[in-house]
Length: 93
Image (tube, rainbow, N blue to C red; front, side):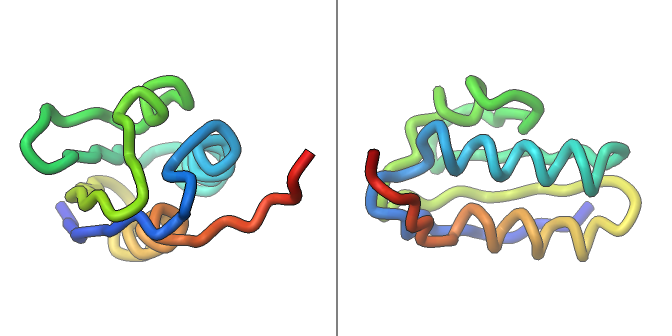
């Protein structure tokens, strides 16, 4: 198992659009890998649905522990940690 602490830098937190990018990457690039996210002081959540990730309520400045288990777990952990810490710049609608 590989672990990495992540900090949320996106000003709007992890909402629908970032969740979609993260979960699409997991399902496309790492289908046989298990990702678990633990927000400080709360229960662990397996990253397997957009709604599950959104329901964690990850806001700007929050920290969490990402745990990854499976094939290429070090690469997978680094990639998903990068996405969680990314400052997404989606165009306003």
